[in-house]
Length: 554
Image 1: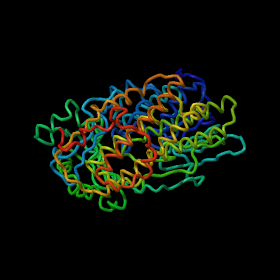
Image 2: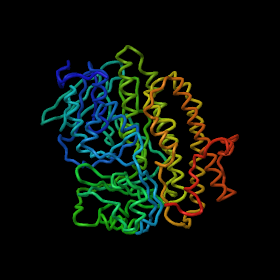
Image 3: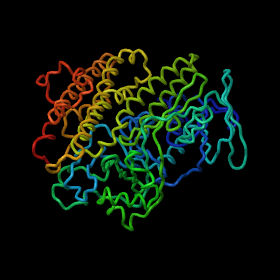
Image 4: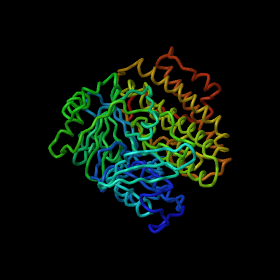
């Protein structure tokens, strides 16, 4: 990709821009960078309420990245050097099933002992957004920090939009061909046009930052605890402490801070039991006593505290043929359990860039806006199914490892390769992929229902000793993850996608067999028909048998 220089041609500041981005957080600044890298002739203005530089460990969620978001930052935007030198290289997502247990060493744990091939990072959001702001200016974007949007006029007659804002006590108006709302939950365009839309995933969150890092490897003197995932350093993972109806996160930040948070089903854990720091600590002492003991030490001074009710939301429209768009949390937001926030910023920003490119090339934008929106909403709805109505089984020490394994397979088979390959806007390829994506969707919906029934049928299974579920030791996990960066022609890519869906079908058949062995009358929700014809002896098993042997394997 070509990059522009600071002295690239720009329109007069504060009078006109090709694109005005409302909001200079993660979504807005990365969009500005992507536009300037891919279309250097574009004039881009970013209007951000907060003054820069912001403090490190900024009070925002979205610190953990997974494959799509990490690839977007490192490769699409060319920021790998910053990520490698100024952020924390992540040791994957890690899960502990430890509700009301102090002896974490005696509980089931799922993670990796070694790094999988495709990297991801933990983001200190303050440090990262300061870097993004500097980078945007270096690439010629007109980044207006400490500026507040006061008015917004969206043209529907083909004319230019107008944005009024205030900065340093002075009023300005900028006219633009495109306006993109990246203002987060302020939702400037969403509020103006009445686009807000609730979804059925009713969850709340509280979170805070503290000084210092937590060494999870020191939480027990049991020799197995220290050795079973060696050489992994647990503290570098996005750690999930899971229980019925909730999970608690621990995310290390490069500024020698740790991010902590409770995410919960609103019906099972009311927000008013945790909406102050004192209440949150009391809740933690009940549900995660070992974590509470580590957190409640004077060296981990409190930096901030925030809570959010009903954080997951939809949106009626995100892309318009009238040359406006919404990206990031200004549009839709899912759930942080699998850290998809940066993924969906990457996907929506890429669609916005493609719409603007088509517009400048003289193509009619409205048909593409409709198609891209349908695709984006389908990605959102399919990913939402991983979380919606699933929180009651989050603490299940046997079902949840299978669910996590399945959810990874679904992500690595379909959505992640689509983004990595640069084909999310390739309509001819997407048309050929449609049967595979529809088959994957059907398998996933049936699987989520099966797992939910299985987990709620046996909510408190007896443990036969701590199990170490090491995904690095699962061959297909390493292969799927590592192949994300493969460069394939269309025919090979489509063939591989079809093969991945066949693997999903095989995995689904194996999970169904294990579930039916436990509960023969369990409703399969159509999974039997979807996996009909699968020969369990035709291929090597995908579900690691030793994970579910009669005796625990450390």
